[in-house]
Image (cartoon, rainbow, N blue to C red):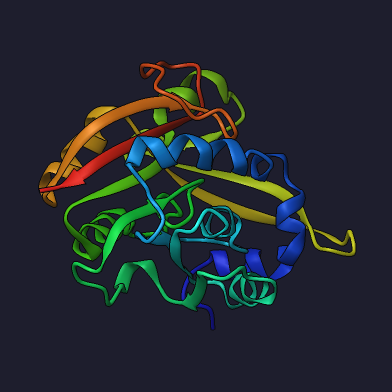
Length: 235
């Protein structure tokens, strides 16, 4: 029995996850985050919800030590296969991280763990665990799906305005092209909600920007862009 609904999705996708267009912007995202977070060789990064390791690989290739964690056994197996020096991986549940004041930076990108809602919702638990993993003055980079975008642009979405959770039925294909239909649940946020979550867990928000995969920057929040990128600092 899986610990989270996403495990079955990841098991089916396997390496085919990296065929999806939203994974193709890794290099630009990392090139933006390195100066934005003040990352330098020798620093330690925790990649929460690392998937097959695409951001961890790119950071490790620049001399930054990265420890990636994901709830999916299949994704961790894939990440370990060709991992560059400096990138390590472990199967862990982001709702129960064991780290305390160990990392200079924590990243959680592309709804890697934050926003993959269960029925009860665990995003606040994930935020608390990531904040705890940071050293004092450590930095967080977190992406979250925009409630504004879903409400305005996804007429076909099953968006619950009370909980902020979007449900969709979609088709996913494995490495051999076999398609199955599955449900996806995504927790969606406004900038105000993200600031309140951070404040509750000792994180000072440095910036919130509207971004798309492969197009990270400092554009002010708007209602026409799918994701927000939050940068914060542990008090």
